[in-house]
Length: 166
Image (cartoon, rainbow, N blue to C red; front, side):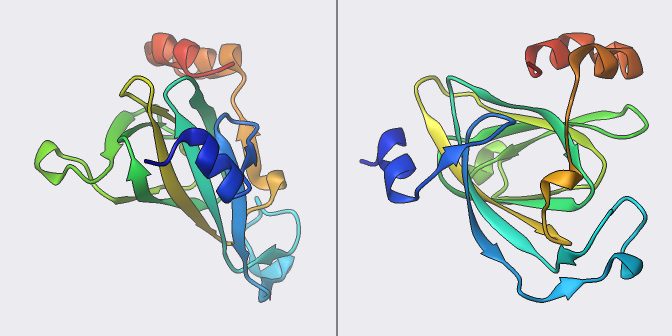
């Protein structure tokens, strides 16, 4: 049985600023010029990037947003509960996993510019997923939520934002 530490070591995972652990596994050599990208992209981007992302039950992926759609692919472990707040303030959630009879799905796309956070619900467990974005990810595209600012923008979600921000 694989443990959290086994995965960290075998996949060479590092701490991610939003929480959890990650490793970039792919970065397209083909790039897109700034002029061909929407205005929110400040420079050249790879066509696509992929990472491994491991989340554990003793921490969470804090609310953040990126400029790209982000595709989550479930690999193994416990289900992830993914929370989203649209730019208009609509809340939704999705269960990512493989227990299809209980409403879990193995792949999901978080739309660009949505605030999202994730957590593993089962105690003392972890989940390993992959995340793919196109155009490719750059930390210039990443914004970690500031608790008070996000609560002011979306007051009806204050409790959730408080729980899933640092």
